[in-house]
Image (tube, rainbow, N blue to C red; front, side, top):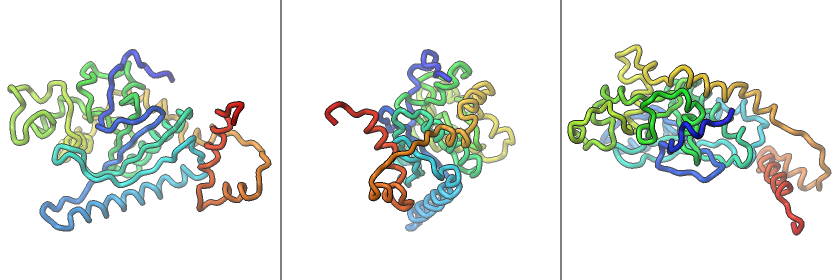
Length: 287
């Protein structure tokens, strides 16, 4: 399915981290222990994130077994909190170069959907050098409030579904929801919080997880519109089986030492195969 680029120009990435072309970045947020003032609070956070990372890797292992990535594999690492109380909390994050294989990028989108489905407390987001490409994919089905200046930190994946936090939900959080409102203060100039604008990561995560749980409809309030959901779901339909279908097998005569290297399950092994193929494909008469 072609992206509706003309309907979504300017959907920049939610994260302050920009990525290079042909690279997809992703973050996974879990519920972290809160022990303000405790000297071992940081250790508790790292322990919780490491347990989350191990659980995610174990759950995805069957889907990734035997899969050959075009360049980089899907990988999650612990990243420390940034930007203080209105910044980005500690999380798992990664970036994958997919080269010419866009299927790698959409396989990662499916993996994030699967992780958040299997672990309901997890919330994920993904972007590339085009910005919020999930918004681009469903651009013709987005609400009118979705504009470049209003989507920062509003596109998420939770429970295996695409979520889009509407500005109208910010009122239930208060001034804390907006990065442009001073801490402990009201909206600048008396502006209403339900006007278009970005949202802090912490506030967005709270809303996507259903707030304080008092409102049974809160979880559904951040779901993307039905047509947008169908557009994203259609793009990742067929995975994980589709990942193994996009494969070509060929016989080649290679030196025995190289064969042992490629067949070593504990070494670089399969990761060298696409790089060798890419080098052969892009060779010139001199090489």
